[in-house]
Length: 609
Image (cartoon, rainbow, N blue to C red):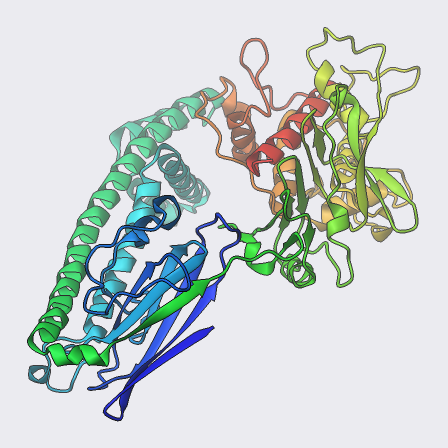
């Protein structure tokens, strides 16, 4: 912190400058905050200048010379701060006495402050008593900033993915209106139909398709034609509404930006004219030099190094010069992890620590392994967790390549890579799912059926699928020993996994408090249970690509349709050789393994691992 003061006729201008250091010698992420007080007139608002100088002993320009452009000492390092112009107090912080300068590199700077003479800080009771005030300017800035935020949102909404999401929301609204109409009593049927017509904007194509579907007795074939009409309508409407919102936001932003910048220029001109008409007022300004440091603490990651993602995830960036967490950083990550995901990331290691994992004394650094590039055989490599008492487990949520490793750390401890090769006599390399079966086998998510066989075409029971999901989640089976369904014995090999899935809303049973554990799991059930798992534990799926609907989409249960669509858009599920999804068909063990393997890789890719 550096302070400077100048006294003039028992009045003085005082400023205090504080710097957030640059993260390294070459970084341009330092921030300098300058707060001023005093001065003849005591208007309460100020203008500021900061410019780089050659060093501690460099000559300072007089405050009257500063608005003249100055060649930067090092253009690559100082960029836009090579020239100088008087800048107003920080409008974003609405502080009349504070200037904020960001994007600075380490080095020496000249800072100057002058009262913004001729301009009031707050609006006077009688507007005729003032040429202008900063309070009104800041109000214009606030509306400008709000317009900028709305423009950014409208711009995002006008992209292909934004329009697609809006169309999906419209589809849900239309489906809700449709179901309300179909369920309505006779006396409420007409009103419900009018509400449905409003939901579809009285689009005749959709209404005709609904009528045709109704005439077929709401058959699956008629439903496919109806859904096609709805999607055509929602896509067109979403695009039109997005463009309309964007155009309105753009016009509003232009108007409010112009209003702010016009008033800003007017107020600056008032002060410039005041100093020109009253040159003695320059004695009321002050200037001095200030050093912006850069920070390096024994190769440690400091709290200000942490990155906060839009979804609340906190990222600790490891590098060749920052190998460990500072103690304050460790404590902050543990505090944040009570409600937020934490990511430990380096160029070759990605570790996701789910919210609620860390406890007060946990060694967070130890949860990030030291990775050495592999020389091959990565397909047989898997991450292993080891606890403080020496117990260990393979981590199903892990993905190893020759040059990187990604894994989810569900508990404190240490993590490393081990080789766990597997092979099955009935899954040759030519099998369509050989890679996925190997992927899940290496992680011990699936077990063979004996005789070194996997049984790729065998069906998978509901109990078996939930057990694999629980292994993927790394649950503590001893914590789930209660009976949740009448037909599930807690002591069975799958009992704890079913209890865990039920308690977390992943499975709901088949009715009458039964789970039917031995029944085969269907392809649409797999999609639904996995989506519920991802949503329950805060995993983020990336935006998928546009896909043509499965020809048999009409056969997919309404409760499973959105889940299947999400997985189809990411190629986690695919149709057969004819493109059919076959939602009611029992899933084979190879199909389930393929879905799990693709899901794990997709999730890590979504996080940029």
